[in-house]
Length: 633
Image (cartoon, helix red, strand yellow):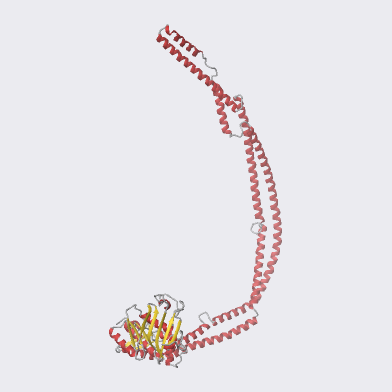
């Protein structure tokens, strides 16, 4: 098989084209220019894109990683030659969830489809190997020169060095045998532990059956005795409850009688208090507060006494008249007597007349005001004299005293009533406690609790008997259980024999695998060593491989082979490239070899070894097409 031309809408590639020729194709491009994308495109055109692959930590599936940057659907064509026929493969995308699912393969220059070639088998038909073998042999991705083992690659190499059949591998056979072995026993799980558990359970049931009959008989005897005790306690509880109810009822009736008597006495006291208050409200002073009223009456009486002590006689008006007449006389004698003396005398007598007149007026007004105030105070109390007011006050005091006495009697009766009511409430609560035959402390309550405990004990015994009968019924017939136990023992011996046979088969398979490995590992290592020597001028002459394709190499001067961890990055790349080339030679078909795709696998080599590696690839390119993508000129 040879690839001639690629056209891709894939990742950063936007309908770009790449052509190849026979032999060695070295494609130089700087980093991040699409070399790895072209390699992934070649693999996708041959084997398709896995749409079921999911993203995980540190890894993106190809359907996401290589989705075209332009947003166009993923698509491409590959022109190649296989079995002396020019073929054009086309893959395109119809549904976004299934990239490059649409497939066609026609003979180049025509519309004639290639018979039997589909999108699922195109890669295997063209390269001769599955995708799993291809990516572990002829497809060297960037940073993935090391070969990892897989059942398919193991089957193919094993078939080449043994029978030629690719139907089985040691890993798959060993895993299948171990799965069968785990099915029979894996720690505490599997058919053998499960059967052991069933056998133990059956033996336990037989042991329980042997001792359950005696236990059942003892439980039935205990149940009968408990029921007799319950009957005696029921009679005692009934009699005790009757007595306790009768005593509680007598106490309650006596308390109700006393409560009724005190209630009637309180009602009478209330009625008497109402009468006394009505009498007080009917008095001249009504039901005014006593202290306030007495203070006001006392003040009014003192005011009346003060008014009575004031003089009631009026002052004479004659001095004012005499002074006025003298003033007039002096005014008339103005012409006859000394004029100045007449004027002064007339003025003096006029002033004296005015003084006497003013005193007369004021005294008269004071007498009138006192009389009016006295009349007002007497009218206020509807009394003719202060003695009437004093008599009314004494009468008010007598009525107020009777009200006070009635109030005291009402309070006393109310206290007696409330005490009787509290006593009645206490008696009712005590009666409730006494009649609480479940939680009280009376004899009836104690007997009731004993009866409840006896009944609960009888129920527990009955439940135990029922449970024991059910368990005996579930256990079944002892003869059937014995027969089942014998059958399980036979099955156990058979499974144990199978388990031991599987262990023996695993050991034999391991020995056979060791023998096969001793045949294919040296062959593969021999080829890898030849390639390793050619790119290192014979410095490294041995390559030793393990089953998982981990490798060691040894120089001429080394006594032992060096592990990969002790090699430089360039030497490590050369060693695994040599292993790849050896795997390609052994695992890939010999008829028309598929191309060798290499993505920057030589980036860690110095100039001298880089040239030696190129020379080796040139030699390999004489038999198969080699496509090398590199960032080194």
